[in-house]
Amino acid sequence: MAKAVAAKKRSVKSALKSSSKSTPKTNPKVGAKAATKAGAKAAKAATKAGAKVAKAGAKAGPKAGAKAVTKAVTKAVTKAGAKAGGKPASKAGAKASAAAKATPKASASRRRKTRASAAPIVEELYFRSDSAYFCMLLNRRTRSMRVVDFRAGALPAKRLYIQSVAKREDIQKVITLVEKDEVSSWTRVGFVREGTIPGFYKRSDGHLCGCVIGDKTASEEISDGAVRLSERTINAGKKAIERIPDEIKGVSVKEIDASDALAARDAIWKAPKARPVSSFDSFGRDAARLWMEVSCKRSKPNYISAEYQDCFGHALIEVLRPPESENGLLAVTQGLRQISEMLQERGIVAGFSFVPLDDVDLSTAYLAAGYRKTGLVAMGAVSGDERKDAILWTRKLANPAGEGID
Image (cartoon, rainbow, N blue to C red; front, side):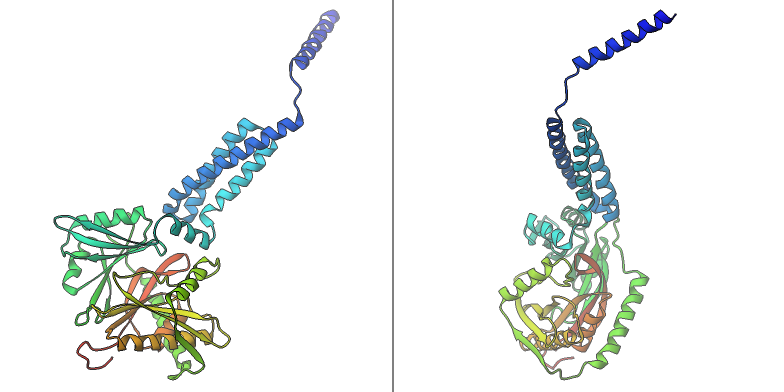
């Protein structure tokens, strides 16, 4: 029995020795290099997978996007890392996974730059058939679109085509401005009547119909909570204008070149922590622009622009960013008052603007400049890198018959 056990031990030792000889020695440097190279491949694969899934995940929201990206990246890293083996690949994969997790939460300026670099920021697209003819003014910076309809009619093809373009271009909000008798044709294809601009067509009002792009045929409407928030914002603004005098002194308001205003716009939109509320991009077709710089002591300069069309007599007025101080509020208020006067001198009848629903300071400035709320627009304003519900502020600057202003 003892002899059999001893023989078995010798057999095992001989087998181990033979296996040791037949197995090549691993060079630590070569192994590390191979693992690192494999790790780099894993990182590249993970980043590529993350980019693909981030695009799809963005439609489902930042949280859902992050989960999808993480899942895809983990799968890619595991697969590539298994081939490479070793800790270097795991470390590279971990870094790639962490970078991919951050993809949906990238800085605001990076997302703006990505959207703007792929195609023209503002583009005119046309749709024409036997029964429909309209222009879509697409703004990729603000993820919005305005439809200018040349042929009235409630056609489902309008909504289907507009929605397909909007989804393809990641557009969140579509609006159209029409006369009263055309409102019903747009509401029948899923749009919602959201406000009125008095004197938009000089002698008649413009009615704003909007659509929040989603999977439903009917558009989302302003919620009861948003209505209450708008009331709180306006009430706070009415209290705040008691501090603003009728004649504001110490404020500089000057007309500037478009290049200076657009340079300031670009700087604000690229700043990671900035919160621009306007883009100064084209809203209408073949329109003219005014550019103003407003400043007050101990406050940063701000910029106001008005895009106006003489043929219709209306003007979109935009403030680049909200006031950041009491002096900044005075400067914006005085700027809005003066640019409104300049528009009136040019024969413009209606002024209007879209302001985020929760922006008390900017709403205060419009109230102090004689504007009033004539609508609430779902997802109607930009605030930094997101869209928010908006107050439609309007002011009838003059009577088209020349009988004075409101």
